[in-house]
Length: 222
Length: 320
Image (cartoon, rainbow over all chains, first blue to last red; front, side, top):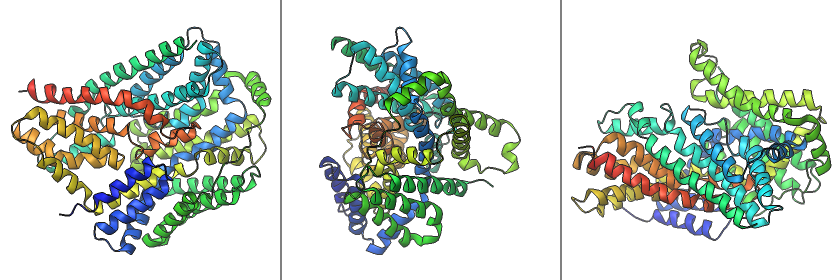
């Protein structure tokens, strides 16, 4: 076996670290890896094209942008801010804590596309969290503003990843069952989804603690 | 039957809107580059199945060239003035949330209806595509409701949609590109190489060390591939099944479920998981494209430790 194709991985790591355009990094790495793996160039090009065409469904979610953009023009983000400004006791960390719980629960029910970065984080969560942080601190400097927005996106990811596996008909559970079945180990989806619960609780406790810390560190900045 | 092709038709139409909206935006110095980028995606979504694999490969290289040589930019047009938005927000109140909530509501009610009524057996919607199809229906309903209620100018959805699309820019197709990189990695045998080298360094008899390498292998391979799905079969075959389950008698349900979740901790820390980590940074207009990853590391590492402990104690030490 040859280790040469690993150079393709090294290219990705270096390319991302040097902040070249990621599309370019991925394309170059794909071609280099394929060639080092012994595939002729046209075969590499065809594999790349085939993979791209087969995975179009990944990009379909962006059809939501016209709706979100239109509503932003009519003040959606301003409305989300106004709503939070009127709630006493609303802090950046507490809003995100509630969002984390809701996101984990609805993902555990299999409703993974109900929320997301385009659906909820940009139009609703990030403006609400920013408004709450402004209530705590006044006008936000750039570092703080970036921090609360990044934390909003992070909270969505944590809630999704460590909620969805509790649902029995999600892709990853079926993949585990299939892989194990290939080695003659029979598992039911319910066994697997039950064992996703301890990690889900740990995720809520760890990320939730960080969210409450966020409030404390915002409070100190005053 | 309504399936992915129906969705690709819809998505192609939306991308055509992005192309038109980009071309109309005179505040964007590279508007024709943006229009060309979105037009190529229209070609992919509408005609991808007729182009052949090499044709699609050339299309991909063209997309990469436009983005890689910085031929796209973003306009500076704001969605109306701040005052207009404030005024509209005041006047319309919380009802403004309703069109945005139509989309999750449609997905929710639709999923229930599909699963618990005879709708499933009618063969109207392809079960594989059902969540995305319902999402697409929600978008269409929300768009119609917004137009009827808000009465915006006819091309407002095109202009506002392309404003957001150009804020995300090339990052929008990065997840799809990474998926095809995964196909090439698999074809070049990367999985076997990594699985083999990890399995080779395992000392016999030390179960905790094996658990540690299994979990870390999941994390590292997930970070390289951008998703835990590609890592799981490799690490299960290299360590999970032969060493932990067969060798040490660990509980297969724990090894499977928690091993996968250890991989998810890796997903939180890699730019290769672009749709979760890079795209939101663009969507939220963060200065630092790795800002979301930075916010996640301090959750991912303690959670990984928790997963390793669950694997060892619940999967092995306490389960025998």
